[in-house]
Every structure is written in structure tokens, then in C-alpha cells.
Length: 80
Image (cartoon, rainbow, N blue to C red; front, side, top):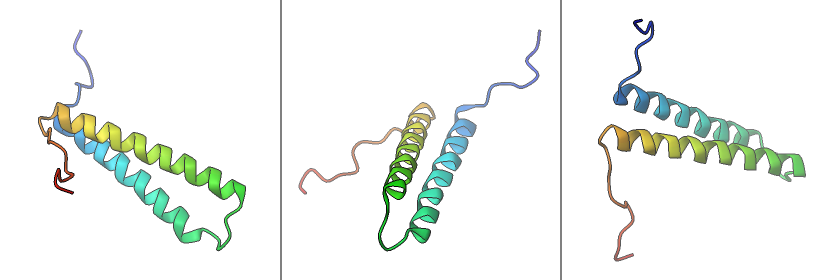
């Protein structure tokens, strides 16, 4: 039986992961634009949830980049 929807290649998976990360980061920005001067506990909880989502999406993007052959070393200077 032939798959109706062939598996995405690594580059497409990476593009999708990058788009998801971009959307998550955009949601953080949108939240910060409407953040009141004095955040309440619900704001802190929402921010934590948004950051968790963004960090997870970033991790997925990095894993997809590795699978696509875009593995890079640390971007931080060792002479910091």
C-alpha cells in the first residue's frame, strides 16, 4: 500500500519547526505588548506558559536542524 502523504524530508520538517518557533516567539511578543504596568499572578502564569512553549519550539527547531545536517557548535565565545 502506498502512503497518500509521503513523509516530509528533513528540510520541510525544519521549515515547519522554524515556523512553529516563530509563531511561539510572536505570541510572547504579543503578550508583552499588552502586559499591564503591574502584572498580576495570571499574567505571570501566562508568561511562563508562553516561554515554555517557545523554548520547546526552539528545541524542536534545533533538533530538526541537526537532522537536516545543520549542526553547529556553541555560539558562545569561550573567551567571554
